[in-house]
Image 1 (cartoon, helix red, strand yellow):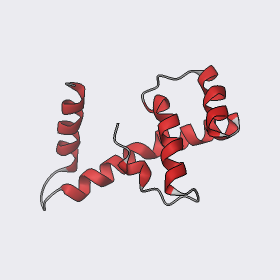
Image 2 (image 1 turned 90 degrees about the horizontal axis):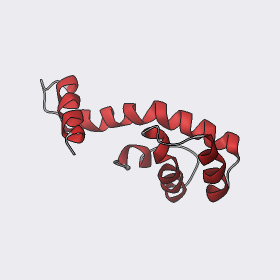
Image 3 (image 1 turned 120 degrees about the vertical axis):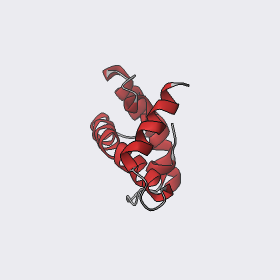
Image 4 (image 1 turned 60 degrees about the vertical axis):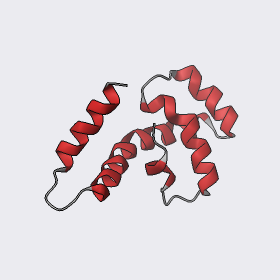
Length: 95
């Protein structure tokens, strides 16, 4: 899972901490985490369980937007973002 889109966040946390939070929240992107994982992750990151839920919700919403923005920056004039995203998802699905 690429970290670049989240790493470019302009949030209030330093980049190193954002990366650490991103790594801790990756299971929620793939929906492989359950409620018990929130408490464990919160303890590991030094955050409250509520903060983890909020961060996971924000990440789940913002991550796809940031991936699209990154892919959009690689396109040449006239190229379709939708088609490029389809190719990306097909490539990721075949792994």
